[in-house]
Image (cartoon, rainbow over all chains, first blue to last red; front, side):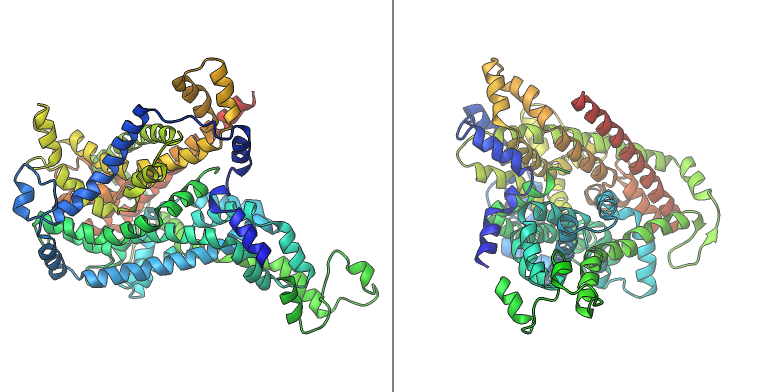
Length: 304
Length: 333
């Protein structure tokens, strides 16, 4: 097992793609990367400010009253009205239910996507079978199909079986993701030495055992990153949940759509507070794991 | 690892060693059930591993996609059985001014939300590629909008873009740019919506570009520097050509994303979001489809819109293939 953990560490997710080129780059000129000039800093600080300001202002607006927001100059510092606004949000829509539902949906989708993506990614990366390349091409091609093209029959189906407003109607279609399969394939092609699998086979291990004792331990860091990315995506998913669910049993995004349509409240501070409540869980995750998520995105998306 | 495997195979010698079997085993004996099981296992397990993906995709992606085409040839209302009407839905679309408006809006919104976005992402990635203090802070900061949902981001941007009290018109007022109607005028509304898209995705694309840039060998830059190339010339002549495949990839992904733009215009319109503003001034194809299907209740018509979108995506795909091929030939030659 010691070997395995070592291999896992040395092949972190950030090195999974384009590693040969990067290694060459590092070896070629260690420490010779150009330093940023003052202009670069100014521009980057500006970019970071533009990225962060709307988030900051969400907090500001959520802690003021409607009157504060609609009467210029717009407040730029946090106020004292946050708790009242949150109470109004909870009285208008069932946010507790929405948050629980979103957690359940995003959690199920992330777990299942990661599991199936690891299985398929492993097969595509390390196993030989007839039709492998053609099937991989199909996986990549399916990434380009937007959900809009399938929602109408899906809606008819869930209407017929009485699943409208039930969580399984948004979980089931998202159990797999082509992006995840591709992500795990990229990672495992580099991180999993074929010798380990062969050695296990020589020892008579059947394929489930190989999966459990060889593939999963090595894939673990990539599985964690993929899980986070899928969780964020599922949490923020909008189109299909809006059709399949309703305000009696919403996800956070469906609840927000209801708030935004103006049927509940015209209080702008309350609307922004609802947006804050919906975003806060993910922002906390980002604050804690931002570095890993950055690494995961850069690893998964290059070299298509 | 190896020992644990051997210990659990109930003391008997390993059942099969494909590479050595002929020499170690008596050739006259038919292969035992363990060997056959083992062979079946190695043959079948890859298919078992990829099966879940394809089963779920077939059930929830491919089948509905094809069935949408079938529905597009019917007149079918919510909760009712369909009636075959041939291509009437498509001719109805052809004759509908709102359909053409939605098509044009999808195109213009797509262009103004992807082109500036990708160019800025390229610039930011270039800056992030320098050695600097606080690099991980900058990376996480520019990615933060990615954690915000379409719905939440749009609800906040509506406030910023409000024509009467929004912060953006206040700022513009300070520099004497005057009052802009970000809601009912077509172009201002589309610019506001595209700014939401740009805000959410620029950082993500910048990180993808950054990863590609870090893989560019440093020797190339050194050679360029020896030739007296400025940083700007290095960026144009070394960086951009080296990461061309990645740029192509992000263009494809962003174009596909732009053709299905939905949440931003819907939420931006508030109560009138489903029609893309009072005058349909920012109704996209996705929104038009949702409008036809769930507002008007004409699922057949909505299916026809979906298939028009499929057609557009196929055209984009074909165009990208051509560009990629031309690109490869250029690099090869």
